[in-house]
Image (cartoon, rainbow, N blue to C red; front, side, top):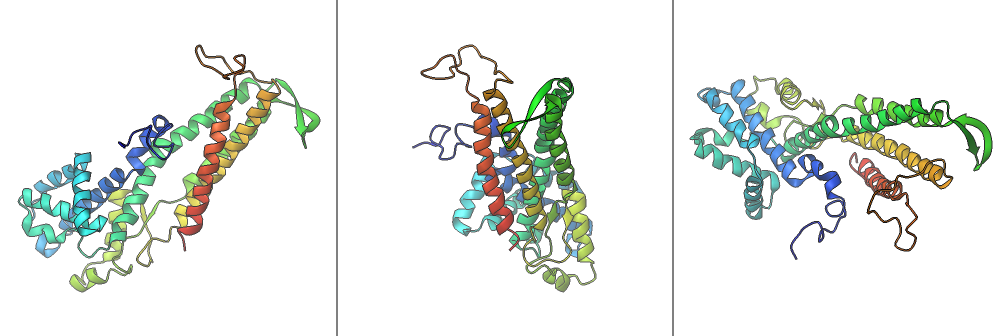
Length: 329
């Protein structure tokens, strides 16, 4: 059976793919492979810029051609890497071999053994992944969260003087206003966005056990810790963890997921409130031409978007909970 939206196992890749298609640029395997290629290329260029003694003859004019490997990276390139992986049975090593082939084409064969010099796979994975997460954060997540937050704020201002009978414990209580109730959600989301923006995107970069052992043995005169700090910050825009094992701590990534989980929970609460307001006929949903609210009751317009949002939030939060609990240990 051919894979498409109808045959996809996950509704994310099927029924709802149109809503999440932009996320393929950040969370698909293609995106990860491309980011790995980018990290490896930029690392090689950084070694040339030191320069390492064996790389002094590498012409800087070739740097743009090297960068074009990831800038012009296509699905076919990712497929080539996957074919190499069938032989190596190692995803990052497949990227290294892919780049060595490109070095030969660019007549840079004498330098190809410095691809991935002194590194372990997690030096690539633990930089490519936070790099992608940061790109998603700034280009997709924050704009969407701000859009939701500002829409809530607009309605809060518009309805600030619309009287509403409040309910506590499900029972009629003191009066409030519709606008004030919407301000509650604006403030909650705003506070969590501030916390989200406070979290650094960390990377691990220090060789097989985090000590730059191979680097120091080969070139003891170079301050490799400072090199790593500068490389991650200037080339990738992430902050290097100073003391690690072979892998990143994932503490900040766990904190990021926990904050996203809280934001999701706020949105779930918002979904339920609006569902209730609709059921109490405080709000009425617009009828769209040709849409059918019920197969048996055509007068109905069901709040399916709020219900769908709630269901997807529950799944997302379960995944966030699992990741934030598992990754740091």
